[in-house]
Structures are given as C-alpha cells and as structure tokens.
Length: 139
Image (tube, rainbow, N blue to C red; front, side, top):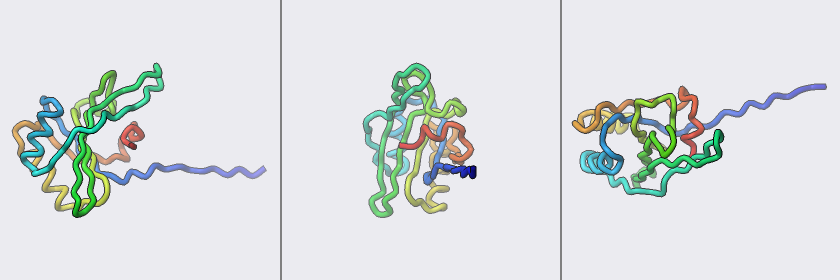
C-alpha cells in the first residue's frame, strides 16, 4: 500500500517586534502613539484556549492601520490572565505584529524610534519561524 505524507506549513506573513518595558499596556501605547504618530486603539482582548485545563487566556490587544499601504499594526500583551502568549519569550512584555507589507526602511525606522524611547528597555525584531508557540500568534 502506498503512503502519502502531507506536510503542513503555517504561513507566517507578518513581522514581529518584541518590546521590553515596565509600563502598563495603555501607557506604553500612549507613548508609542506620541512618538511614532500612530493611533493605537484598544480592541477586544485576544482569547486563547488553554488545552491544559480548558480555560481561556486573555491578552490585551491594540490595533492601528496605515490606510495608504493597508498595513496593520497589532500591539499585543505577552502576559495574560493565566500565562504567557509566547512562553519561551518571558522577557518580552509586549509584541508589535505588523501584517501585510512594510518597507524594510520603514521597519528599521520604527525599531530605532522605539529603542530611542526612554520608556522602552529594548525593541527587537523576532523571526516568527523560530518561535515554538507561533500558533498562538495566528488570529
């Protein structure tokens, strides 16, 4: 009997920036809005099902969109109600997920502007393919 093996690979078509800071989500969004001329607004919390005990994990979520290029920015809290969105990156407090196209120069300008902010300890671009729990970032 012939066997066929199907390989399934998740399409990770987004850019991820990890942010470390001691501020609350609404405070750091305020400073990012002010520094980068963004307009992050609060969205409904990101809900993730916890398969271990059947409970739901809630993570703060903010959204902003560049209308001209249709680029979406999501500001997501890494620490939720009962755990982490990306458990292997506990040192990251928040993530900025950039969906759709962004120019490399624009991305570098955003990261350097975030790193210049005194409220942010570090802002680093992360390769989503190297994260074990990358499925948590698909919404």
